[in-house]
Figure (cartoon, one colour):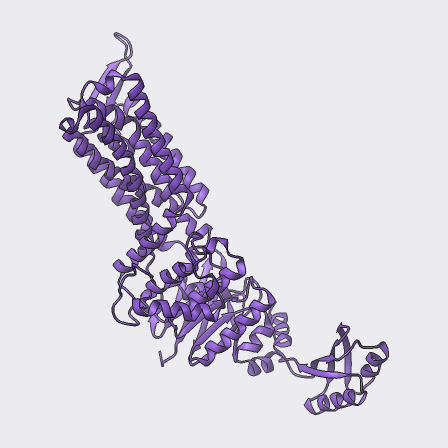
Length: 314
Length: 286
């Protein structure tokens, strides 16, 4: 398997005449985060479920560290942490008991179990709830425990299916930080998400799938350039105070500004025609207008590439 | 946490047996704290109290003629009902709930075979059914000792006791089978209840009484050995009678032999457990 951590080989899944996955091939290795993108029904969750033997493939194989998941599930998933959809936990168990159960299944030695649980609950900020019953917790809290269960035992590979689902904005931000931290700790993370900004923020690579077929896989910049020819850039501008109409008008008149969209009273999206040099000129002109510009955030292009990719195939 | 199982070396996924015990432990904790356990405990205690009151107040002859007649009357009329209730309460949604409530998503993605989850949950359900059964047995034996002292303890009751444990395993096997067949807990529970309480009895009547065929393929027929062993003498294999003198139409009553009862219950336990395991192994979480 050429030392790849994950190898997806000619993977297909059919439900009668409907093909959920069609001849999917993918290889991943190293310590990084790979975003798994695609519209609803594209086959993301199906793929992740086959990874964990929740569903069986009609054809093909998934090898994790060289071991076929379908043939030797226990061995293959030995160093894999999993969060698929939003699992429920036996409601009468406490957080500690639920994590102990998973820890014991994973084979964390007795003398390490308490410290391993403590480590993961601190990461997901659930240490104050250790002895409370899971049934009394909110959806967001349960999702944090699910994340804790996935990373319990320090797995090499972490499979996450929309991990921020059900979390409030603060929870989402914390989970993103956890994933970034895990990435830096030598984990390979394969994460499906609908939130493109999340993927571009956390992941270095992205795999795009639609109608069960892989459209692209590679570094975000490579995938973006495959689907999106950068003729224009979208930049988000933030201002110190509410913008006047006259200021917006002045910005829209700057040479190179193609379009101005108001996000709210203090933020604008501007579309700039031309290359990066042109972008620098435009931003410089906005600063000279003295309208209180405090920051600007260029788009990664992933959203544009995503829209372009799925517009092309649908 | 106290009571943890030692797994030995680091990074070693425990063997299937240990993982099954882990599942049994946590499924048992779930049952222990569940409302259904206490409801069933209350039901079996209430049945025991009701029978205690009836026997103490009315002193029915059928109960108090001999120790065997006491255990026969007390045990035969209630124990199979308690066993069926236990099987349905603890096994009815044991597997279907993993799909419907999505608790399976928390477990199945880990390095554990589905068979370990199934067997672990089965053992927990069996254990808790056994607890309910033992509570009822204690009330029965308590009354028996009160009326007939320990010298009047018939060996047939011990046989019936062991057959009842076998019936718990068989009924639990059947409920787990239906639970793995459906993804909806209500469906699996309703079908099991209807089957064990009504359909089997109806089939037994139609097949045995009217068609004169020994209903060896029906679990509740096999479970009749629980009460048959408490009859002295043991009932004949079959009793046929015309419904009227010179009538062409007759009815038959079949009484399962002890060995047949054991084989039927054992057969149900083995076949339904293997079938349930097979279905759960193949079933997809989608």
